[in-house]
Amino acid sequence: MATKIKTPDYLKKLIKDYGEIIRNGTEVLAQKRNYKTISVSPAIDIALGGGIREGSWLTLTGDPKSGKTTTAMQIACNCQKEGRPIIYLDAEGRLKDMNFEVFDLDPSKMTIVAPEDKPIPAEDFLDVAYKMMSHPDYYGAVLIIDSISSLLPKKELDGDFSIGRAGLPKILSIFTKKVGQLLPSQHGLIIAITHYIANTGGFGKAKMSDGGNKIQYQADTRMEISGGGEKVSAVAPWTSTSGDRIGQVVNWKIICSSMGPPGRSVQSYLRYGHGIDKTQEILMLSCDLGLIDKAGAWFNCTFMSLFKDLAKEIKPDLDVENEEDLNKAFKFQGQDNLYTFLSENPKTVDILESSIRGML
Image (cartoon, rainbow, N blue to C red; front, side, top):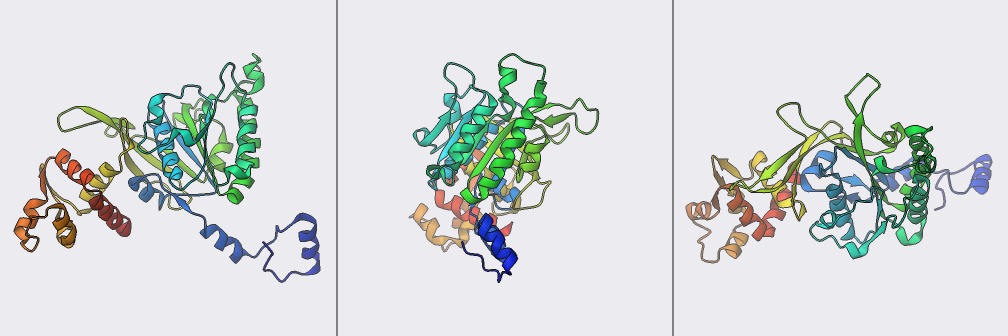
């Protein structure tokens, strides 16, 4: 793109020598504002300030089996619907059928990079990732690295333990510098999954993210699975009213976001065999914001009085002009019954989501 600056001769020479690298600040800002927003889930999007901006880097940090891979796969699923290519680096070598159990995720449209007969050193893994992200066929791609903690430098893989873990941060530093310049122009997204490790330095938190500081510095958005002391655990069982375990509740803390302020906390509901449950998130947010009235075990969808055409569509025999009948028709005992109603009538979920995003 030709620069819009009225340039003096010395700048013209720089542009001639190095290409269109000098532009007006307003032009650059306008370009960044044109980046698309990638959705995670309704609740997480709100906590992030809107979602995740393309051309950026996201880190997901937490203990093993806490929901990081499922969350990454949910983002991949959302991006597939936009036609984005998905690259998955299986550094852990433990990709399972259950990891693909995200509603609407199409594994046939994912490119999996994984060793078959021998381990792949970190240098080769990241070189493959960079070359794929650079290729025109992967414009706008989402790259998932699962996980940073499982990458092994070649010397360490060959049995030379003298460098220790110090070798990996240096390799990652080179990778992040290279890919950091690539992502904005390619409009892609990198999701780096990291684990907690013990902080042996004696200062700060007892646990810290693996992979070195460069990964954290590079990340535009950082999310950590973190509890709130003794009262709120990082991950809790999610059970139905009947007591059956149907998933897990994940408590995320937004360390930083490319679209909003840091420090927010949010709950995400991971349903087994489904991924992040959008309907459950909308249900909980609607109750918190008063869009659905909750009194004890009863839930009243009072918002339906504003959408009488939809109420008539759902219940054709209902006299929607009778306020008492209208309220009774959309009053449910127990959260499970409310969930069933919302999931069977997706238009109600869309209405609630639109209202929630408008309010927040």
